[in-house]
Length: 360
View 1 (cartoon, helix red, strand yellow):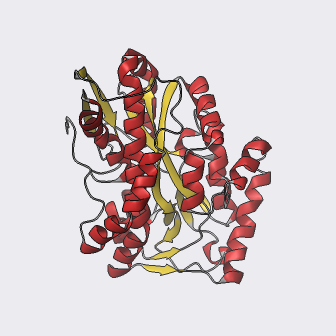
View 2 (cartoon, rainbow, N blue to C red):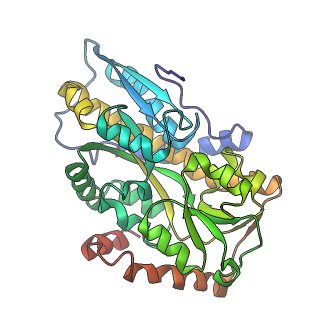
């Protein structure tokens, strides 16, 4: 069992390029910090306390990501921020790399109170409530700038409130999940959907994602993330649709060869906290804690944005062939992908879709 009182922010990648990128991103960090509290409402004005506050009941987090990943640092940085900015001491015990169970079982564990916090991509939360299904619509999110606007927008707050009511958890600020998902496989290069026909693709349980993979002519096969490497190795699956960071960090390149930049779904994940745990935290700590989660997410987003191209480069170095479709080829992926809006996405509130498109 891995236990952490709290850790430093970690590093997605240790290189001179990263350090230079951090300096270039300083202006963005300042802007993010300035707006960190913009979407946190319902708490009194917060100032540094003259007397340290404590909430020492252990808060257990079960995460899929490894130490240093965005989903990890957006939780692990919270105790440090609370201590440095608000003189508040908390006890976070963080278990990375799915050590407390699969991605889905950890979500169940938060609901039941076995653990206090977990994080996952929006697609995996759909089995509980479809509030965030709109973010899985192929090609609705056009990149990082739009995602960052969505994350602090009224439409996000509106859908978070719906999710909280339907599921009975506290929704914490979102964080990027590595940018766009690529179409990976170990059989052949896929310049168009016609090339992908018949491939067995590991999938999450989201109906939209499953329908998308079918629209591209593949056979979707739901597999928990922790079992994906073995599934690829044994031929249960030929590929998957995920971001470069996860392909690299979990050594999936050892059982894959080809990738295509289809840019259909932008990875977004968010943390949830067990509602009883949240309610047990004094209000004088709840406000600063939400601000700390927002700041940690803002910082993780900066690193994650820079990491997207970095990990593509690292994957090319180990022999992965990453293909960028030309305009004609890309339009074929896009046309088939958008057909999902009228099938698996037909029940999504059109006003939510319109608000999201307006932020592009």
